[in-house]
Length: 241
Length: 227
Image 1 (cartoon, rainbow over the protein chains, first blue to last red):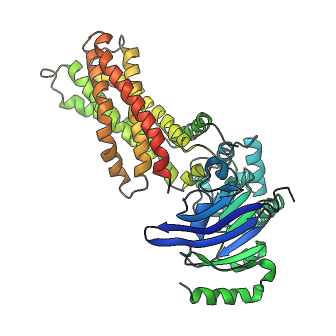
Image 2: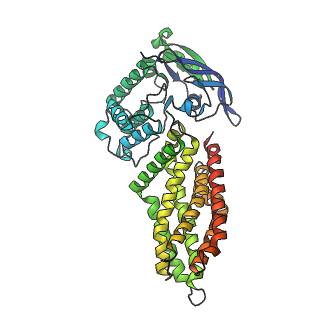
Image 3: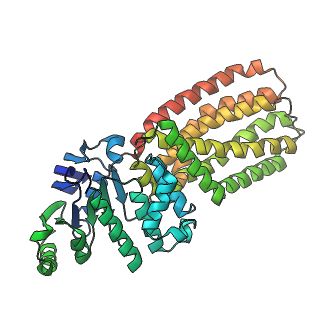
């Protein structure tokens, strides 16, 4: 583990975010240290994606506080430098090749050798053989691999992942799992939004269930009985909202 | 590591130009529009009533204005398609760099259209432009800077709306007037064979509006992308 492991990577206190009269986040308290992974579950509209977008600096909090990598949000370029975001959309330029997309991201983040960094991360995502194909010619799963490569090419200290396994085949999922494990080992904190409980729990050190903009449940992975968790989750979601 | 404003802007401009070179959709549609416009004006023109030198400046600047809008429309459209704009907004670069990069790419786009449209107008209307070419190029460049400064900002504002194609011209055109008016006036003086000094007042006005628009739009841009 690196020096970053164990340091507070994400911290929110009473975090709120409203859209007009609707509160998408309603007092979220969260602490995550380097090397930890939070699996975030919840029904559609619970506020999971909003939380990721606030932590990524794409949305301003309406209230409360949030900090990533020790920088209080909105923290400008300093905060954005430590975050890697993978969202529902590919965030790629379809006419450019996979390599060009990842290299462009690396250059934006000031990576010292963007060409080598892009080649390395595309290799880790097992898509090096299609690196020079335009993104628009790649399948959805291949595009997702490129998106992952783009999100982590700068070795972020905080990685925010919204349904990262969507569209990935077995090989892609294995590559992503390995990349996430490497990131954790290097001291990065991961926030993983997923609807797949088994997948989330297999990677997580902590798990939370969001409902109506709050954490309805939050606990360490070792305290969770995976067998019961699915039933508890369904009950929690069914009786919520 | 945070990149400097200019370094990040150059990266973004290069990326936009690479996309345009790869797809060529906006450039060709703007070029076809420009050439069609020149031809239509030509056939609607009665040379016995209006001398070519009086008509050409108007034709040029109507075409540049609307052809430019075609490119500006696409400027933030490429970012919106797969939410690539989120990757720019989460990068450790000043927000102004995104604006500046987009504006530089748009400037290259408009200048490329001008490079073909100006000789086409000279050819169709039989207006000799050889002697005034450097001054005319300077006017075209100055006007392009102003058009692009305003258009890039409004492109960012309009792209998130359902009526982006309609909203961009509606928002932009009133602000194009202070740019197009001195540019057309200065062009008219040159084509009429008047000395450059007579167009100096219009050129000063053009430069003043360029400075005002570039500065205001660059500092206003971050507020259009913050949520």
